[in-house]
Length: 256
Image 1 (cartoon, rainbow, N blue to C red):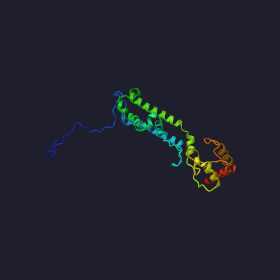
Image 2 (image 1 turned 180 degrees about the vertical axis):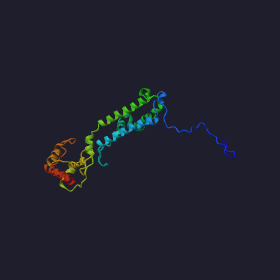
Image 3 (image 1 turned 45 degrees about the vertical axis):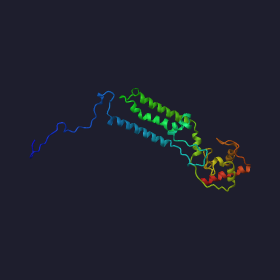
């Protein structure tokens, strides 16, 4: 087609003038690949992830994680613990081959090999099938890693008294302590080592602030003990015991 002087318009038959919708191919003709990645497979992955996320959020609302008290570096008996999803690494460091002179093996080398193996699993087993028996290397590595995490987490959690730990380390209300009171002198002599200088408690004993005990109950516990507190801790006279109980009750009344 000629138009003007020396100008020619050439049409290319390889480019279709009709716009076609973005429809994926029929993957049923290819063995082992029965659907398109977008949007079929990816949409299923998003749906599964959304269901899991909603379920996890509902679980956190129904059973919120307990909070401990403010960190106190002066408490010598406090044993820090990682969050539950790191308990398996905490348990791993208790074994001889991953602690002491071999601590670098337990902290860096062994976890690095484990997570590196899981990261490389898709590249080590590149079979076209999706079924577990068609991906033996990747499935075996995933099952081994999952079983190791579950066993180590269970072993670590089994040896922790979670109720006593939560009770001993829960946040407590603060109040001013009259350290010149006669009862405080008795408390300082008999109870301060475990319950702290401000009755705040610690890892070895719970807080004495916010308790709902009568005078007789406090006196009985001081003499006979309770829970992890052994009997015979209090060494004072009956008059000192009476002053101690009145002092603890007065502190709790001021804290209300």
